[in-house]
Image: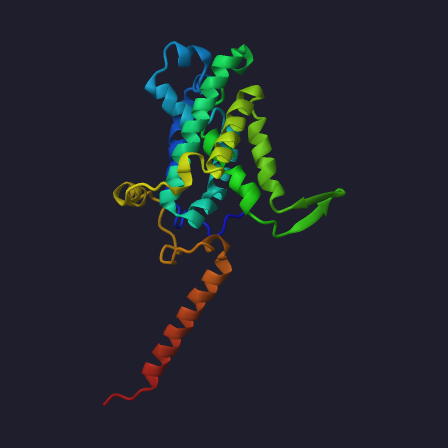
Length: 258
């Protein structure tokens, strides 16, 4: 999977979600409490606590889910580069809130012990991102494997399928809820696609300085086609700058002192 420039260049909101998922997943994983992190009928309709709601939004319920989920979140940062961090933050909050609401309604309607508790993690955001991925990301390469016609997008779909089926019905409900949230966003429900946060709120993402946030592409401008810029182009630019510096230095050596 490739989402354009490596790192989180022009994607501070995506970086914040990935880091938050890792910070919540790893400590709870070491304590062996993966199974207790998700929403269930009992803790939603009887005694829902704030910490359980937070962990259900960020902490993945197993190490494989953390690996696949973080990889998909990293790939989908391409949408933040296309629409900007402000609108992408609205997309994150909308898809997460709608997905959680749909999960709560599903728990109350189904009352099925086999889905209690639901698997935890940012499933709403991940599977909501598959909606613009399906409609807006074109296929750039096609190939055949064992007689099957595949494309470069197939690997992203396979990773999502693995995540969707990782915990059986417990992970299917959050995944489907995320897809429905993504469809509601695309249909511009309540005019959500026109909403933007005030600049001082949106700038909070860029003010968060993570240790790995600095990269050699930090100075590149933000464009709608940012995801299509390749690292090879960046390398060519750096090489041209180096040759120019060498040429200038040699020219100074050849110039006699007055």
